[in-house]
Length: 117
Figure 1 (cartoon, rainbow, N blue to C red):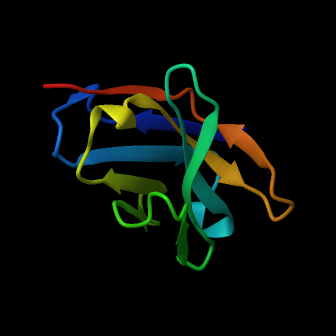
Figure 2 (tube, helix red, strand yellow):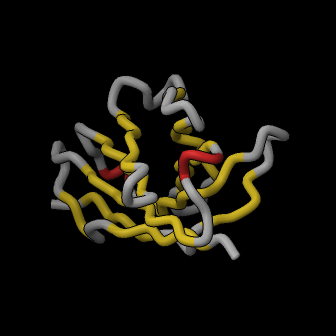
C-alpha cells in the first residue's frame, strides 16, 4: 500500500519561504510522477506542480515564479519550496502520486499552513 505523509511548519511569516516534505512509503518515487496541490479556505483545489519520473518539473504558471519542487530518490522524498509568502498562501497542502492518465491516485492527509505575522 502506497502512503504519503506531508511534513513542514504549520505557521510561516509573510515574505518567508515555505518548505514542505512529502515522504513516500510502499513505492519508489523514481517510478512515478509526484505532485503538490493546495486548498485555501473556502476555495477549490489548486495544482502547484509536478516532478516527473525523470526528475523534470512543471509548475502552475501562476506559481511558477515562486515554487520549486525537488526530490531525493534515495529517501523516497520530494519537496516543495514556496517563496515570498503572503496570507493568500494559507492553505492545506497535499502531496499525491500522479498517474499517466492524469489521475491522482494516492494522497497524503494534508498539512495545514498558515501565513501570518
